[in-house]
Image (cartoon, rainbow, N blue to C red; front, side, top):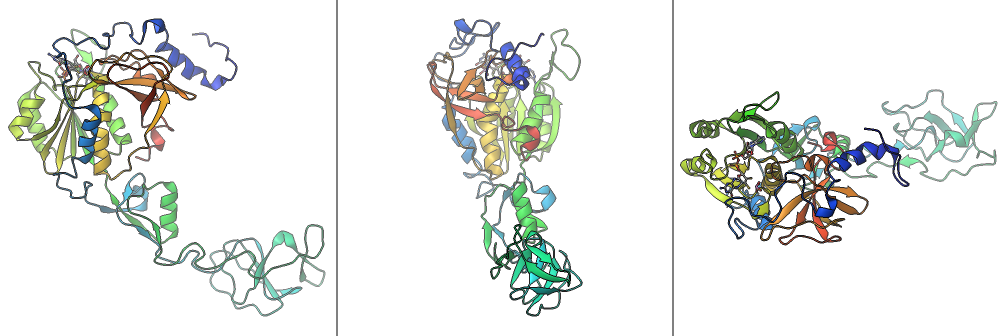
Length: 462
Ligand SMILES: Nc1nc2c(c(=O)[nH]1)N[C@H]1C(S)=C(S)[C@@H](COP(=O)(O)OP(=O)(O)OC[C@H]3O[C@@H](n4cnc5c(N)ncnc54)[C@H](O)[C@@H]3O)O[C@H]1N2
Ligand code: MOO
């Protein structure tokens, strides 16, 4: 494709993104948000009832968020805290407050390279200087100075630090305080000394329980004397991809199609804070599913497919056989309405995602995200809204989740948003929550950010 010339205000670097967007946002704009081959939104799918089926979308999210607190094995809702080395704590949540194990700084320290001086100048300069990391030096006597480095321990009886650019030694080796203009420079008492305990005292609370461990938190913890941190561990997740029609590689053939969810779900779950411990294909075989579930030790099992009422839809009967408690069984959201959430045991949940790929994404953000957030004691993302650039057709009774690209202060609904399609979401920054009945241009839609949209998978801290 020939790159087009950037428009005013458009960065040439943005071109690839803009072209990717054009691919999912071009034709038929005038005819609404229907993409070629997509079902008309608002039309009833075959067999779907003419009323809302399933709980309200917001209520389903709340149920998933609260499930571990109400009736799970964890009174707090989150998993049992563990102690991990600092190098393993990034992205986890503090389960104990960070209490300073030392004063910071832990000794009086020089804030600048220069001289530690005692009393008014000029000063006699000691031969041997003081570097950071060295042990205690002999006290200074009045009228004495010693070369000192930033971060070095201040010798006793130092009254100030004179910066190197503010001092000059004469031909007799005596140190004078002078400004850049060579005019005398005043040295005030305590200048450029960081006194012990300036930032905190041993025992001060530095950060509360519930703080997300970010890179600066790791640095703070190390500075304050920690080698390990008490954190809520990542929930362990297993992914069971159901369906005999799925291929792991190559081109679709003979009615078989590529498994899109095996590659999509594990990194997305990791971005949501899970530790993905198992990803496996389980055929359309009820006994195999039951066996896999019984043997699984993950905190959350995510299944794909088999949620509807087809001849090989095994998730419901298997859950019944296991005596699981269905917490959410169908949600009034499109796509993805057959999604479900079950408690298999006190400490194990199952999120049943529909097999249609965008419907599975819908189940992931509706049920898996809030459940994992509570288990990991992660803070809820700040909600926000943006006006939609274009109208979006609504479902008569259900909420719709529609992939959008964020452009300036508006959200641009993307085409190819049918339940079986990934083309729209693959170019999206967020999902817009469209209420039953649809939305007009300018409607302030609630947006669910995709976990990597703010800076890339690698910076999701997970
Ligand atoms: N009689 C009804 N039929 C259906 C209803 C309904 O209400 N009544 N709902 C439809 C909706 S909506 C959805 S969504 C699907 C959900 O079906 P299942 O969760 O049972 O999923 P499957 O039947 O196994 O698969 C549906 C579809 O998705 C494809 N698929 C499955 N897994 C994958 C994968 N890993 N990668 C790519 N594609 C996958 C599968 O081949 C099917 O085409 O039910 C509707 N039916
Ligand atoms: O529309 Mo279904 O809800 O394809 O997921």
